[in-house]
Every structure is written in C-alpha cells, then in structure tokens.
Image 1 (cartoon, helix red, strand yellow):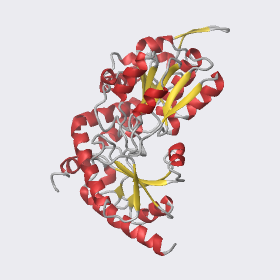
Image 2: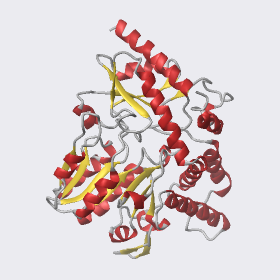
Image 3: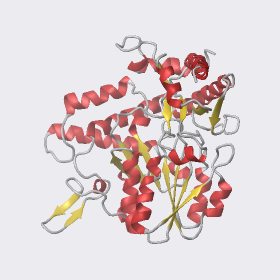
Image 4: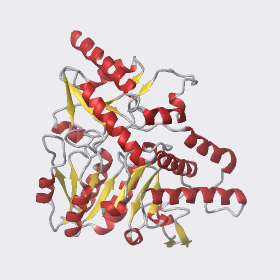
Length: 417
C-alpha cells in the first residue's frame, strides 16, 4: 500500500492545503480535483513574486519593470507551447479560461467560415462550455448541430460518429476526457476521419492536460482549449492553441488596445499573432503562474502522474464495490485503462447534494450536481450525481476514509427518508 502512495507522499508537501501547519481544518480531504486543482507553493510564490517585484504592463513600457514582466509573460507562452508540442509560441493565445477559448473559435472562425446548413458534430457527454457556444453559433448562422451518442458502458459511440459525419460537417468539437463519465475519447481515430471529410477538430483538453502527456501532432487536431486552474495554475487564465495558418485567417475576437497595429478614426489594422486575439491588458500574473504550474507538472512527470492516478482509480473502484446502493456512471478501469481518475455515482431516492453535505461535515470535499453536463444527466434520467475525483496527491487512506463515510451517509439518509 505504501508503494501506491509514493508519488502522493513526495508531492503533498508542496501544497499548503495539505500541510498540518495551516489555519483551517488539518484533516481536510479534498476529492474535487476535476473541478479545480490545488496550487503548489511553487506557483503561489511565482504569482506573488510578480505582484511584489515585477508588476507592470506588458509589451507597452520602455522601462525595465515592463521589460521584465514582458519577458516572464512571453516565457509562460513558450512553456505552454512546448507543453503541448506546438510548432511556435505564436500559436498560443492567452484567454480568461477554456470557455473563452472555445467562444473565440465560435465567434471568430465560426462566424467567418460557416454558413447555413453546415454541420458541427458534438457529443452527449460535452461540458456546457463546449455546447452553448455552438448553440449560439448555430442560431446566428443557421448551422446544424449533431450529437454522437454513448454506449452502455459510457464510451463514445464511434460507429455513431462514423454514421453522422458527412460532407457538410465543418467541425468536430469534443472533450478529450469527460468530467462526468471519466471516458477518454479516441481523438486520433476521430481526427483522421474528420480530416478525410475536410472538417476541422477542436479538442477540449481541460480534463486531460494535468493527467497525461498531450501532443497535438499525435492527436492530429486543429484547435485545443486549455485552462490554468485545472493544471495547478491560477484561476482567470487559459489558452487556445490553433495552427498558425488557421489563426492568421481568423478575424479578431475582441477589439481594443494591444491587438492593433495602426488605428485611425474610421479603421484599424491588426497586430501579428498572437496579439491579434489578446485585446487589452491580459492576466499577466496568472499567465506567469500557469507557466510555473506547467513546469511543476513536468518536474513530476506526466507519465508518473498518469501511472499513479491509474492505480488510485483502480483502488477507488475496488473499494466502491463494497458500497451498497450506488450506481457508477462511465466505464470502469477494466473497460478503459486510460479513463479519468474519478467516479461519478448516484443512489436512488437520495439527492447527491445530501450526500455531499454529509461528507463535508466530515471534512471530505466532493462534487454534487450536474457538473455542467445537463444533457448527459437528462440522457441518464438524472437530475444530479455525486463525483469524487483524484489527483497525484491522492492517497489510499483518503479513499478509505471517503468510502467509510460514504457508507455512513447513505445509511443515514436511507434510514431518515
């Protein structure tokens, strides 16, 4: 058992939340990593250092403080590009979050490239951030949305995808890993078929970037949306990656300072990439913090993280077998080894919020609700579910305590229903 916890024992010391020296509850168990990651001290110090000693606007000032801030900011862009194996840092657009990155594609690329009766393929398991922007685009442009179904095991129905794609398909926009089912989608196979039909592929990588190595060349995609707060970085920052030639062809998303080359009273010209899409003062410290978070993850090793989380997921599912009355959504680790390190479940006639609140009273943090996946919950005829999600800091002891308290919560709620 100690071997299973090796990586967690090494890394937990880096996280103030898990330190016994903090002022809040010392025995808190955080099992909501899929919602947002905790931040290591290396990221906190980097963010603090910017605001203490390097606080200046980027790209605009001639003084030394601005030069230092710009250097750190652009270094974060380079770190991000190398993280996903992009050809150039010019292909990285800093955004507020992954949701804004997807909206950027929908409004800029979608408005300029799509026309009435063009089709976009999504799936039933998408997060709202990869549904709503395309719904809005479909209303603006008269496009059609198609949805790939899921199998009984909670996997993407690949045969259904093959049946739905056609010459009118212009975009396939999918999450890499489901934040609810845990399913890891076969993006390489999907990309090949999509490109054969002349369609582009957008990948929502929010649930995969911190858990496995991502290579955009290997995945053969055209757009990727990522979020800082899911990868141990600060909130308020994310990024869009796209091929340089695609970004060059896209009009600006937002207008204002920084994204311009020349402005007159009646027209303007745009800056080169990536600045064309970064209007106004960016989240400078947050982007620098995201770069530090990526460096931190790489210092641990994405392969080491993935191996640890796979073993923890197997352990979690094995322990959950002893919990009477729960139903788990999505594939088991036996059905899909590279699934996410999470388990989403429900108990008939018990609301997931009640389970989460009772666990919280025992200092165990899990998620409850629809997880920004209402269509998926409607497919399963559920109004909500509970979710426990792990990371490389998770331990078997945490899982054991969670399962023990989950049993108690279910028994209490059933006896009082």
